[in-house]
Amino acid sequence: MPELPEVEVVRAGLAPAVTGATVLAVAVSDERALTRHDGDASDFEARVTGRRLGAAVRRGKFLWLPLDADGSGGAHEAVVGHLGMSGQLLLRVSGAPPERHERIRIDLAHPVHGELAVVFADQRTFGSLAVDPLVATADGEPGGFGADERVLPAQVAHIARDALDPALDEARVRARLAASSSAVKRLLLDQGLVSGIGNIYADEALWAARIHPETLARSLSTRAVTRLLAEVRSVLHKALVEGGTSFDAQYVNVNGQAGYFAHSLHAYGREGEPCHRCGTAITRSAFTNRSSHICPRCQRIR
DNA sequence: GGAATAACCTGGATGC
DNA sequence: TGCATCCAGGTTATTC
Image (cartoon, rainbow, N blue to C red; front, side):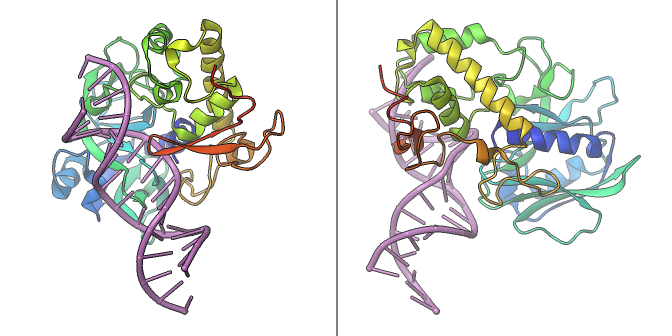
C-alpha cells in the first residue's frame, strides 16, 4: 500500500524523466481515475496536452507535476496524483503495450531522454490524477519535497506536512496529541495532523515505541510522544532506504520493481509470529475498518 | 467542531 | 471445479 516511502520512491523515479518534458498526448481509458478532477476525460486531456512539466513534488502521499513551470516558479496549475491503495505510475518507452489496469497514459517528449510514456495503472481504482490550481502555502515554506516553490495544489492544502519534512509543526502535533481523547493510532493516521503515515508504518512505529494503538493520545507522557515521533521518522526513513514495502504486485517503483522493507517489518502482517523483541506471538485486531498488529507483551495499554 | 463510521473498488485467498 | 464470501485500506462524505 503506497505510503510516504513508496510515494517518495515513485517521485524520485519520475523526477529526472519528466522534469522539462512536454506532453505530446494524453489518453484516459477509465474516467474513474479522474475522481479528483473537476471535469471529464476530454477536459483533462485538453488541459494537459501541450504543457511543459516541472519537477515532481510530494507532500505525504500526494505528488504533483507543475504545468508550464519556467524553472523559477510561476506555475499556476499542476497535475496532482494520489496512488490510493493500488495505484502505480510507471515509466515506459513510447508505444509500449497497455499495462494491466491501465487508466491513463501521458506521452512525453523530453529534451534529453526523448519520447517516453508515463502510465497510471490502478487495480482498485482508489487512486486518481487531476489538474488542480496551485495555491500559496499557509506557512510560507516550500509546498513539498522536491521543489522550493512555496505553492501546492488546492486539494492538498488541507494535508499537513509529513513526518520527514523539516518544516513540520511538531509543536502543533504535540498539542493535538495532548488534547485529544482519541486513540493514538487514529491520530497517526490523520493526514491533517501529520501526513504520509498509513496502517503499515503506524503499526511499525507504535511497536518500536512500545505503545498500544488504542492508548488515549492525551495519556501519553511527553517522553512517550518524543519516542513515538522519533520512531515514526526512523521507520519511514528505513523504509525509504529499502525502497518501500511490497507485499504483492500492488506497489512497485516507476520501473516495476518491488521494495524490500517487507522483510524488515516487526509487527504489520506478522500475526502469530514471534515478536522480534520478546518472542510473544504478534496479534491482529480490528481497528476502525482495518487491522492493528501488536505485541501484547511489549505494547500494553497503560 | 470533533469524532466515528460507511462507502468506494478489485482480485487473491479461503471455505464449502 | 466452481461459486460465494471475506479481506486488504486511503480518502471523503455523512452521521452523531
